[in-house]
Length: 351
Image 1: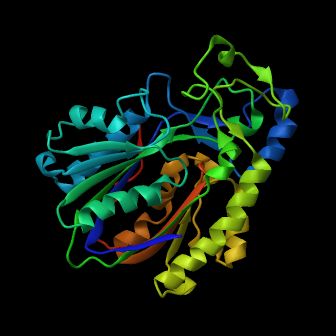
Image 2: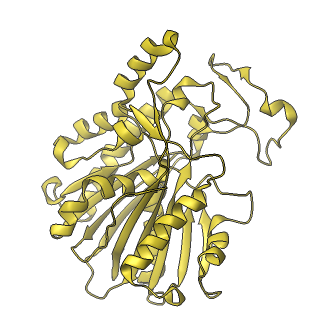
């Protein structure tokens, strides 16, 4: 395991942005309705947010970042670094962070780079950004996290009902009096085929036939460039690895489960999230969810859930949060961070 404690790092604000378009998982052909209703019951996702074709992940994260910078009253010339965590960048290269550095008018001295991670990306991103600040040189860092995950043309029913689009922005600052932040991170690349896209990279460069739908070994019709999801493997990985990782993090921080005000897990699906919650013996009211209305928003799911369901409590006073992301890689990471009523939390942004 990779455990770490960061000092002098405070989250100054978090903003979340989603597309206005709502897609109902029950909006389907009559002959598919019974199957869709069963899927909704099992995965707990009734509707999702879908971007129009001309809106990219960078557009969503920029909206969140600009709102947050404005609410914080930050001078853009003082932003030391911009980090983007995504697996759906606008272009194969350059990364979104470089594009946004220019589009947002950040100085050339602003360090900007992308991290290629999915559902575990928020805790990992916080660790990278926090480490840069904790080292004592950088003072203000923006972490932009999210994905444009929807695929309206997908013929994979298991995929089509899961994913939503969302982008978030988190502002981190150096603060001598900030409470310690605790991190616990893992990876297991031997399980990469549980969530992966076979074609389109240098291992299997894009060819015309990769864009043609075909019936795969699992009986699902998909293209070679589409995401392959091994449901049983993902369920087994998530429910077996996340609970002990959470327990290890609590032990590292010398905290009990009751010392945590909110547990914010990646929003995978109802079956996975409820199994994790029950294995840890956590009351439902301390484990908020955005699955029903927003689906799986990849690395944005933790800050989005915080924005929607923990905002009022944080604005009222200090809250200790345990956040845990898990998924593609395979990778999983958790952190414990304390937010206080100085934290700026704008209401959900819809574009």
